[in-house]
Structures are given as structure tokens and as C-alpha cells.
Image (cartoon, rainbow, N blue to C red; front, side, top):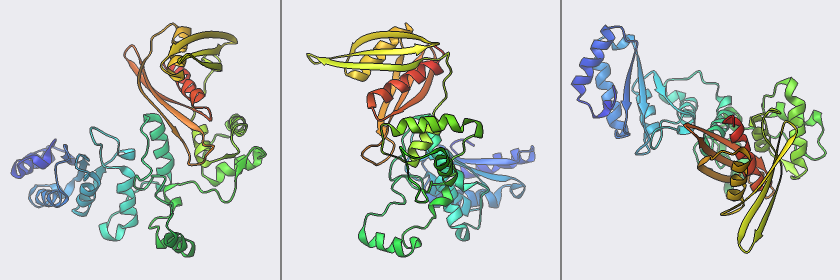
Length: 360
């Protein structure tokens, strides 16, 4: 019942009674435009429960939007009112301001099942890795202060807080980080001299799943990363595992060379494909723009860049940079990313991965 929270209550009751009689097994009460306040939503669901014929035989489903920042509050209020289904999205992604964030709804119920008298069957340990994967695929970064899965959620800077956490983590942490699958180092640090056994143990300790037959490929990528980075973080490994494998039929970045002469950025890019090198140079508004124009020359196609973002994937000074790119060719648009300690290289890797995914 779209826009149910702004619909006449008696009309909703008549419609719901009719569809239940016709065989519906789920009725959905959406706050389509994020308009409702929690107490209003609670009263609406209670009214529907008390007046809808056959309501006891169906699931009451909720669909809340976050235009006023109340999607999760409304969803949880709905659960408290007796709803049995909540439509959520990972990281709260969705139309306009987004939808109820699955990780917030699930962990609120998980942490306060005594209050809501409810539970879910979600495997909570998969929340963090799933969130990271969705962020990578969607090119939508997670705010450090994002509830549940933000990087700051389990960090403690205040001296009083640090002292309390050292004595008893429950003093300032109402959730165990491992409960949502946040990787734990177990005092194992990966670096240039780490061997295959340590790498495999690191993956197991942090519940990072890699098929056995692919372990050597990922170990090679890890060793290549240690050539430019002293220590490798869990986030680095997760991003390595999430990288898309490319075939020999695809383009690979062999090298690039950037020059700035008289405030003109000129970049020469060399791509290889099936053993053959392709070299082009171009001038642009910065080295990344020049690189992309050079690649467009190589593939003899014009790619439309829809979005571009560069960020560090950990908080260390030698953090690996992640370039996220959304690009379009003809009517097909895709999101892709590249990883490197060199920001320009990461940007090029993302673009090359994109043209491979587009099949150019």
C-alpha cells in the first residue's frame, strides 16, 4: 500500500481486509516518503492490527524511507508494534535518502531482543564483510561514524574510555565487534617477510573466505602489495579478495608516465592485451584525466565518466588508495575500482577494469 502513512486509516483497513480475503499472505505498510514519526507509525500499525479482518493470519511487513532520518526508528517501532517483516537494504542504500539499514535494524533487535521480544535469523557475522562488499560494488563510501559498521564505531580515543575498555570492553561497547564480523588481527601482522602459511592463517583468523585453488593467486597479489607497503591491514586483504580477476583477453596496465610541462599534464599509458602492447599519450586537466583520454585513444571509444572518487582504505600513513569509478558506454553503465599506493595508478586500474567489464 504505497504511501500508507499518508493514507486514510479506514481505507487501508478495507483494502487490507479485501486482499487478505483474496489470498494475500503479506501486507506491506510503507512509509514511502519518510514522512511518519515513530509514534504515528506505531499507532497506525496498531489500528490496522485491531481492525483488519484476518490480520492474524498474515505477515505485517514494513518499508521505511529515511528522508527525516527516521527509517530505522520507524522500522523498530513497527517491530515493537508486532510487525513480523522489515524490508531493509545493506548500508541503508535506496531511493533519495535511503531505506532502513539492515545492519542497524538487525543489531538493534539482536542487542535488545529483551525489549523487542523478537529475533532474526540473520547470520550477523556476515554483516561487516557484506557491507564492505556492497560499498565497493556500489561505489558508495561508508561514513566513519556510520552506526554499526563505521570505522569509528569501536575506536576509543578518550583516556577515560580507553581505561574503561581495557578493564572491561562492555564498559563502552554494547556489541562485540566479532558479532558483526569485524575482522580481528589476533596479534598477527602481515608484512613483506610473511609466508604463505601466515597469510592463510591470517585469512582464517579474520574469516576471509578464499577458495583453496585460488590461494596462490591471492598470495601473489599480497606479496606484490608488500613491495610498496610495510604492513598490510585487514582492509587491504578484503579489497584484494574482492578484486575482479581479469583474463588474458582483457587489457592490463603495463606502465604509465606522467609529465607536467608548462602547466600541461601529459600522460603516456601502455596497456597490454594478449601479449601485445598498446601505447598512447594525451593531455588533460590533471594526470588522471589525461590517462583516461589516452586509454580512450587505445580502445578507440569515448567513455562517459559518471563519478570518480579516491580515498584511503585504512587509516595508516602508507594506506593503499582506492579509486572508485562509475562509467558509461552506450546505454550500459558500470561501477569499478582500482587499488594501489599510487593514486594515479589506482585510478588507471579502475578505468582499465571498467573497459574490461564493458567488453571493449
